[in-house]
Length: 332
Image (tube, one colour):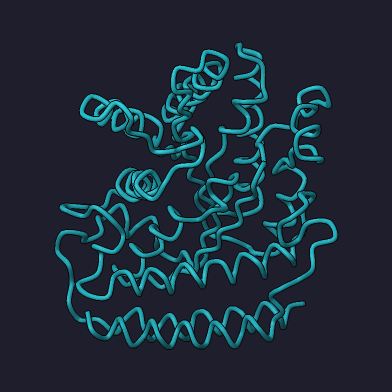
């Protein structure tokens, strides 16, 4: 097993070192801050944890584009899992999801120890709350259970040796005037308020919810039908960019002047570079999730799911992707 991880490490970092330093031009609008440089010092691997919004990966890819555009030689693993909660739900709380989809919601506590042991991250960035908000009681009891779960995850990461744990407030849940769903909006606001107040205890909190909510309200003043998520839950690319932008600015103190998408981080071929980073992220997701395992059907690593990304496939495809990235980044 150790040889497998050594091979992956070598493939990713040898090629990364070559192409991340290929560009001599610097976009002065996105220069990292002192805080950023200090926080990322000696960080070699960042793991993202979360639910389906994280698994879908756009904000993670946008964040990785920013790292690459600034020459940071850091591996990013997206290990978010669809349907997952931070909180362990009771059978009654899981009943609706079980009836609708045929399986209960997974929760991060079931796999967290395996994730940490397998990947040994220097930094963990996590975003939970959307599924918790739709499942937990609409009261202080629900908020307390969510806060206990987040506290436990954070402590487990730090006790394992993770250097930095960054926790994001949940994105906006858009009930679109559906009174039956408004409780989820209200739960998410309570979760957000609690997370923000933990800054007084020196927790690293990135508030995604507040700026996304403001952007939603502002855009609806101009266009009443505007939304970030057609289903009220899963943000589109614009919503994911807000998430990435707030992580970069709040979490790392970076300047992001006149940057409206991750493609704008590069002076040329931004779309092609981003697609390569996206494709690489999916490869790494499939490989690592299969190695770590979890309880959700239908996702690599889940029950009875056939493995699609072997070490050999991963090695060959990473070589091709990193070679293409090197060529594009030489043109910056």
